[in-house]
Amino acid sequence: MKYSFSTLGCPNWSFDDVVSTAKDLGYDGVEIRGVANELFAPKIKAFTEDNLAKSIKRLGNLEISCLTSNACIAVKENNINHYNEAVAYMDLASKLGVKYIRVMCSNRAMLDEGDYDLALATYIRLARHGEKLGVTPLIETNGMFCDSALLKKFMLDAKEANIGILWDIHHPYRYGREDIATTIANIGSFIKYVHIKDSIRLNGSTVYKMLGAGDLPLKQAIDALKGIGYDGYVTLEWVKRWQPDLEEPGIVFARYIDDIKVLCK
Image 1: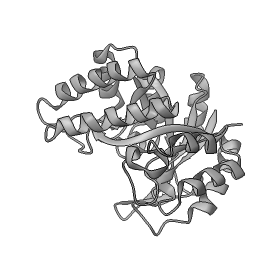
Image 2 (image 1 turned 30 degrees about the vertical axis):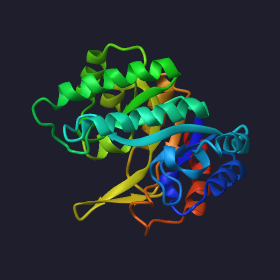
Image 3 (image 1 turned 45 degrees about the vertical axis):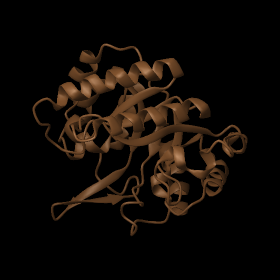
C-alpha cells in the first residue's frame, strides 16, 4: 500500500510546506483538500496556469494522490454548481496527472425522494467526463452512503467503467454502525482509495484521536484491505481545518507514517 496525508490536517501550510514535509517524512503522496486560505483546488495559487509546470516539477516523485472536492451530487439546490465543481476538479486532475477526485452524495444522513436518482444521473455524467481525461470520480462512504449496502446498489446501478469508492473507514463504522467485514463484503470490489482516522465517542460526541489512541478496529480494516489485494493509498485525514484544537500536523504526520507502516506489516 501507499501512504499520504490530506492537507485538511495542515490548514496553515503553504504548498511548499506540504511538499517538503511529505518528502522529508517519506510519504508517497499528498491529498489536496485546500492549501492555506483557498479550499477550491483550481484556485490554489500553485495550480494556476502560471504556476502549474513549476508545481509539478516541485512535486518530483511525490504524487498528488487525490483532489478532494466538496461537490455533493444528491443536492437538488444548485446541482449544476456541484456538477461544475466536480468537472473543474477533474480537469485540474488531468493537468496534474492525478487519477482520482472525491465527490460526496450528500452530507445529510437521509435523502429526500428523488435524491438517489439525481445522484445517480449526476455521477454517471461525471464518470463519462472523467473517462475522457483518465480521471475517476470516487464517491465517499459518507452521509447516506455510510450504508454500504446502499452504496453497493448505487455502484451497480451506475454500470459505468470509470467509477469507484473512497472508503472512509471511520464513517460506516462510527456513524453507520457497520462492522468492517460487512463493509468490505458489500463494497470491497469497488474500493480504489482509503481515508483513515481514529476516534472515540465521549458524552455523545466524536472525539478524534491519533492513530491507535481511539477504538476503531484499524488493524482489522487494514487486514481486510490486504485480503482483497488492495495496493492503493491509505490516507490520513486529520481534520484540523475543522477542529483547530487538534494536535499540530508536524507531530501527527510524523507519527502516522510510522504507525501505518506497522499496521500494514
